[in-house]
Image 1 (cartoon, rainbow over the protein chains, first blue to last red):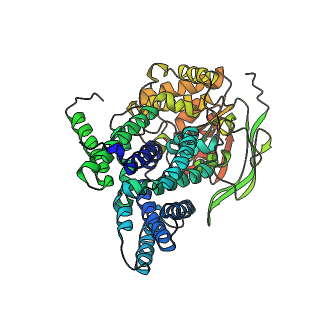
Image 2 (tube, helix red, strand yellow; image 1 turned 180 degrees about the vertical axis):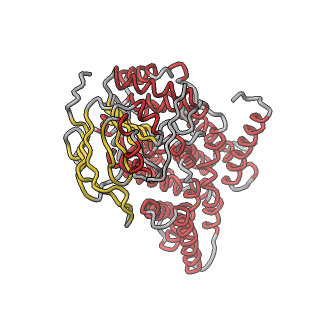
Image 3 (cartoon, rainbow over the protein chains, first blue to last red; image 1 turned 120 degrees about the horizontal axis):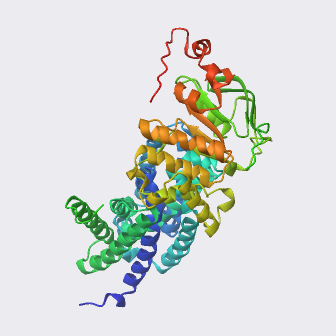
Length: 270
Length: 254
């Protein structure tokens, strides 16, 4: 059997994967509870436009994806809270708009290349050492901010009016959260790919929610499921020579399926 | 807490509010004193919930002035003095993964505590609040697994845990069965009489308000009446409030 740790791209992929795997459920749990799951899909498509800009201008595509995702997230939140258009309409405008932009930019860059394909489906081969540093720095920041502010975000998600009455600056927290979600989505792309980012954020949380635990335990279980799926997904994708994103999501779906079956068979008491 | 019934906690002066072109409240003036148990009644769409939201700072009046604890609402910062029990049926996702204890913890979060977690003293207050509403034994249960009456007690505990001086309740017993309602109103009475908490209760239930509250405000765009609840039941006020064709049958539950 090959010793996979001899390959530096695997080590980089695992490092980046574990960092992403740790922050994804912290963001995902609020996306799910606030019925924002679709924003992950929208922002990942916005990130595709960001990646295309990066490839065209020969800048690190992860940086341009981060920028595009962050700016759009604030614009979406603003449109949504202004109530001038429906929330999901704002999402669909940004999703299709950014996809259109990405297609035009790819055309200008004279067609598809291998790089872009790996951004779509996730391939740890594309994770560069500079990306690992960037993912490391931002993941730590997101982890700290989400740890400190999760109590306020729980309150806002559970009962926004009561949170406002108690003097919590709700609009500020909503903007901060959406910005951190945008950063997490952009950072996840090298590992999981644009088309599967929302699964990474949503599936471990949905699986953990089935266990019917307190908020803290639900988050803990989501973390366990997320990290397990990412590590086993990356390692198995190496041996099977397939895209890491696909393997990770299939493992997450498998865990969700097992939990559903156990619940139905009452193996696990709820 | 020593209660000074002359102290104004909330002053509303000539307040009007419109949603766009639609006038919801017109020229309302009202004072609420420390220790009051005020019931606000009115038909659906009368603006009573809007009035509550104005007092909580969730909406800004189109004209007029609102003072909380003597301070203009725009400058008011002591939000922990206000507790809020929302209309349960609307505002609450029963699948949300939080335990009773975690819900009551929320009452301890406010602007001053953003950068730090809860201390031992916070946990003591949370325990005390849960014991006051007799829900301590169920503290580890998920909020969605409780009955409606129990859930409302938890929301009261959450309001209590911020150590408020006044608690606002928006139709708190919608969907709560009769027996649980009686217990719930007995609890409110205890909070008002024994702890001296000021209570502001919005309800469409005339009978509850006349039995429970010490004062009543009848709202239908205008403030129709504000004084003793027993007098409010006199038909002429109710006709002003609900229209001349309305008939009132007062039920007395055993």
